[in-house]
Image 1 (cartoon, rainbow, N blue to C red):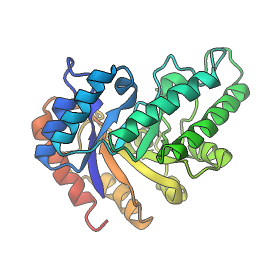
Image 2: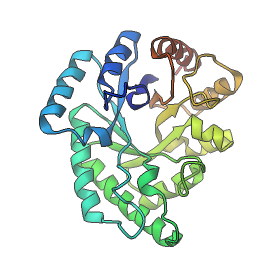
Image 3: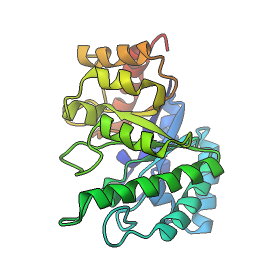
Length: 266
């Protein structure tokens, strides 16, 4: 299993993409970095080129990107704009691909959450329509998009693995697969059977110790049980630490040791 870190969770305040953290990750021994796509999209051409050069010099590729859509790119509600979403999606996926990305995470609960008073059935139709477009654009860019669900404290739609699986089923495209996030899984107290059922469609993963959404620094039994199911379904994808830390240098090194122990035999 290839192991990485979501740089947006550990970046210094003055470093919106987290390139300084990427350079530290390379020294720790991580395999890749996951970058925030909405932040990449805010860069002008010169800044993006400079980032690409610095990333290449780090020795790590941005094999994955998260934070696909900013909250103002509405995927539900009266401000839904499919042509505008398509233009943004195409440009964003092109940037991700140019940095070496193979998978882009479609979480973006701020853009997906259903506005108060808006009909839920209409919002779901919008999500499905937008996801079909996203899947088509992913295939065009030779990428895979992974649907991420969020816990009910953060989202009011796509809050479980079965709901994410239903979206994937309705879109029915090889461009759209599924992501597991252990933090959201644990908060929602979902059964490990949910991972087994989704297994054939899982292409990417996020991980954090749910007790504080921090870097995993000990291979506790519940974490080992989760990895045992990933091993059982022969999960083939990557795993990114998406967690907070007050000491990235120490926690980053320890988390890599723990995740290598948990994923031994993959």
